[in-house]
Length: 274
Image (tube, rainbow, N blue to C red; front, side):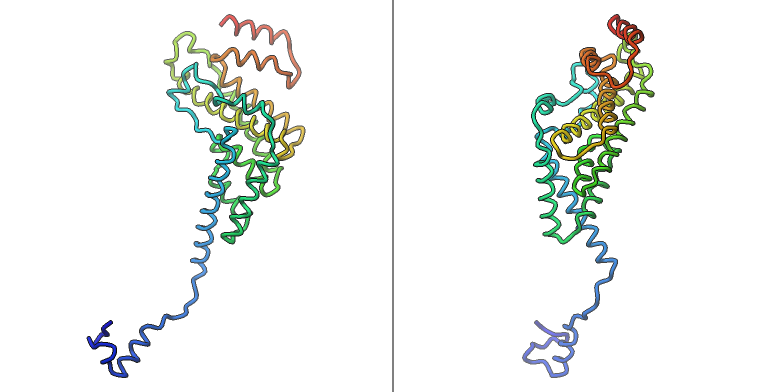
């Protein structure tokens, strides 16, 4: 290469060689701490997203990561409230420990390869999942808490989702207006979003109960009852005025509280007349 004077290297003077040597020296400056923090955050985020992709692959066989149906399709009464094949999945035996061990093994491999802490990866993954703002990610959040042996936090997520299901019933006051004016009212259109979210949460909670039965994580008796009620309430909201077979099967289940047979008979008679 030519130097600034335009001479070849073998034709440069000693002073010019010294100047070129000084210019080629790279100062050994320390890396700013903020750069190291940015690198660590970016690396943790990338590892967290890779973990979520692997979790999606593992839970996909039992329909744990199903895309929600478009509203134009869901509002049709012939569209199922739960994904196709859900009954087949829930009737099979669950090996929860094997499912959790696969995720734990992959997480440890990622943390070893990229030199990041397991707690920070799980924390970032929970931020990405954004549960309960994304009800279709309840299973993700529960399994992520199980990775850090925090079954109590996983239980809190299921209980909160069950309570939201119960509160959702209060906003579902006039669901039978489509019997008179068809499905063209504002309430019927808006209620479809409540129905869809209720059905999604119910199936996610049902999968959590399925994983619990398979030994993936423990649950207290109170959380087990509240989650079961949340599943049934969500199905009632989604099926009210839409699928009487689903309502009839729910009524045949064992009661979760004290029963009033007289009021129940009147309610069921009015539903049959409708």
